[in-house]
Image 1: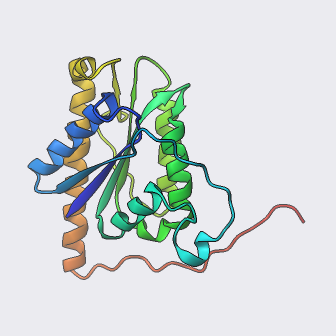
Image 2 (image 1 turned 180 degrees about the vertical axis):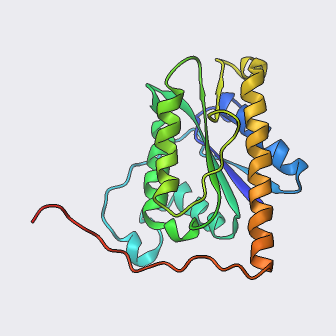
Image 3 (image 1 turned 120 degrees about the vertical axis):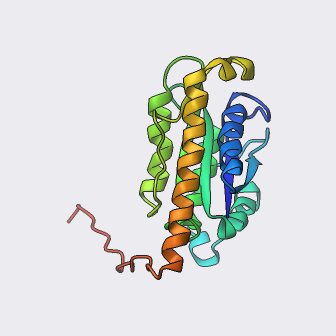
Length: 206
């Protein structure tokens, strides 16, 4: 089993990366393979709502979003990490996830996911809530921890001093590993994934 952890920070080895590494370490200790996927320092264009991806299952902007979607097909779980910018997730990961979940949602259904956020002081809860919205509209089990999945600090060294935050990351990794193993055991036992009804879309303007 494998979990992909997406780093939505411009800083490859910064605070968000430090938190993700703590989650990945605990997953590894529990026998789960991991890959930290760097969104990089380049800008990521937002979704234009063209709808072409509904036919192709691929964004017409052929960049890192399509690359991640291909990896998502075979992944078993996901962690999306972001720094906090103005009490929100980074613009980079927001554009990334807007486009990704617009067309690649079938690759995420019934796969566990978690969000983690990193901030200096405040705004973490709002950013954390924002990221979880992508999972709860995509039929994904959301993995929790002993506290909201956040760390505090202006540098990686300060994040490591956030002992409660680091412990929260480790517990998150352990909980995700446990859930992945439960899902695998359930499949072996013949427990089937719930059948999806045909989607009913209701507009409130008559």
